[in-house]
Amino acid sequence: MNGSGPERTEKSLSELWAMLEKPQPEVNSGYIQKDTFFFEDNKGNRYRTRIPDPGDRADLYATLKKSGVKFEIRPPLLSDSIQNLLLAFLPILVIVALWMFFLRQAQQGGNQAMAFGRSRAKRVTENVPKVTFDDVAGVNEAKQELQEVVEFLKNPRKFQALGAKIPRGVLLLGPPGSGKTLLARAVAGEAGVPFFHISGSDFVEMFVGVGASRVRDLFDTAKANRPSLVFIDEIDAVGRQRGAGLGGGHDEREQTLNQLLVEMDGFDPNSGVILIAATNRPDVLDPALLRPGRFDRRVVVDNPDAEGRKAILQVHTRGKPLADDVNLDSLARRTPGFSGADLANLVNEAALLAARRDKTKITMDEFEASVDRVIAGPERRSRLISEKEKRVVAYHEVGHALVMELLPNGDPVHKVSILPRGLALGYTMALPGEDKYLTTRDELLDDITGLLGGRAAEQIVFNQMTTGANNDLDRATDIARRMVCEYGMSEELGPITLGRRHGNPFLGRDIMEDRNYSEEVAEKIDAEVRRIIETCYDRAMSILTEHRAKMDEISELLLERETIEREEFERLMAGLSTKRLVQPQGPGDAGGGQPAAQEEPRPAPEAAPRLEPGVA
Image 1 (cartoon, helix red, strand yellow):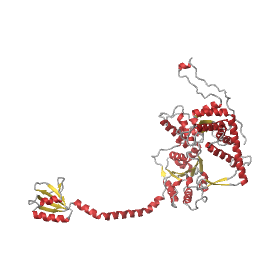
Image 2 (image 1 turned 30 degrees about the horizontal axis):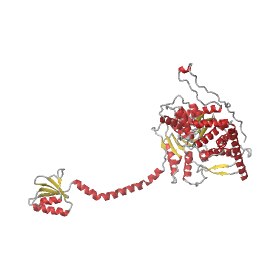
Image 3 (image 1 turned 120 degrees about the vertical axis):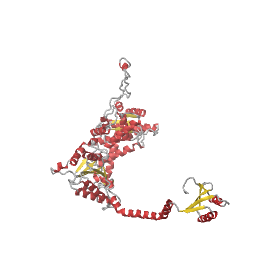
Image 4 (image 1 turned 45 degrees about the vertical axis):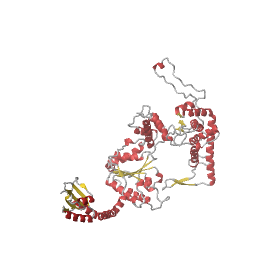
């Protein structure tokens, strides 16, 4: 009799007793296995009944014998035996597993400490897109300086045969976004050697000795893969001056710097390992780090000039569909002071804007809108401004534009707008005609006068001032104070520098100023700054009062159109109508039809003359 099979029917214990207690028992035969009775009735039907109570099983044995039913007792199945065994030993197995887990953790404690002190430098693999010098533009001098590094990594014997020593370290200096990291990646891509890059902040941890251990591991790894290139980005995080500031003399950062100095002195100059570091704060670096023998070569990576900006724009627009009206020369001239990262962002914003407008090519309109977005922030047409405030903003911006345009050293006004962008309610974009690296006293005075033009316009038109000139006053006062205290451009105080700023090497910020002058001189400084500001303000008032009609005319047009470009602004300043030319619509219009509308000069005076430099 087989005890397994899906055809057996479950019978309760009471039903089984009822079948056995009849005068003629209905149970024919069966067997007991573990706590279940498997049986057949007289008709051949197969049943089973679970009897978990041992007492009931003993009663069943007696009843079966008394009734004469054939039955047998079978041993449990093998699977049941294994299950019982596992259940019996399960607590012991859990305890053993936990004990082995904690034992392994204790054994790996030392190894984890060693792993904590390993370098976090990442090696650039072949999967990363390769960067070459063709991808770097606008920094030709820096590329030439780094060509020697590439040549040494490719062919070191050429230099060693002549007894030449390649620079052990190259320090890239420049403002953020100028392309220092990109240059280092280009060096690695050109040389085709292992490239390890790490941030200066990755060396320093809260545990003492970890930073120094990571420095050792970094250089050991680089030597094992020589020739190789090690790039430390933002090295000022670990290479700041020692023995000054708020930290102690034995802090973790200082130990890391000491180990870095030892490693840079310790490895063989011809070992094939070159260290490149980048920073935008060279003034806070430790002098021992900059001495010859460590960072022998310093490469300045500055923001590009007009030609450099054009080259960078050509690199970033490579492979992008551009419309025929896109003029990269004009874009380069309109973006003075932009870094390489700013220009990359500008091109990307233009591409996003073209996609948002469902265009198949990027036009000049998208690029111009992107310039405004990068300089002044995103446009905020949802900001509701009352007509009264909009008129104040219009006169304020026209006051800036008119004064800047009429000053002899003012930058040309390229755009005036009263559309809110970012945190500003309006803006005036004045861009220099060329890159300037020196500024004269007259130019600074004209800058201050132009900044005060908005407040002067409010005073003339509305006879009151608003808070909109807050930023203008901050910038004007800062320029005037620098003229007096830093540039020595004060006739009253003479060509001297007053006050010295001390940058904290740990905080990286100016936290104090050494006043190397008396209270009497401080009063003279304040008086001189006030005199410069008031003189420039009076000059702005005089210019706007003289050209009040022109200011009203441009302001009314600005309220109507919300934005005035350079071309329209020049027409207004020359007294011409801003009505656009109506071009012929077809060949028939050109011959004998109604002539196209022509511009007529306004009765206003011709081009407003630029003023003579003011004296302050």
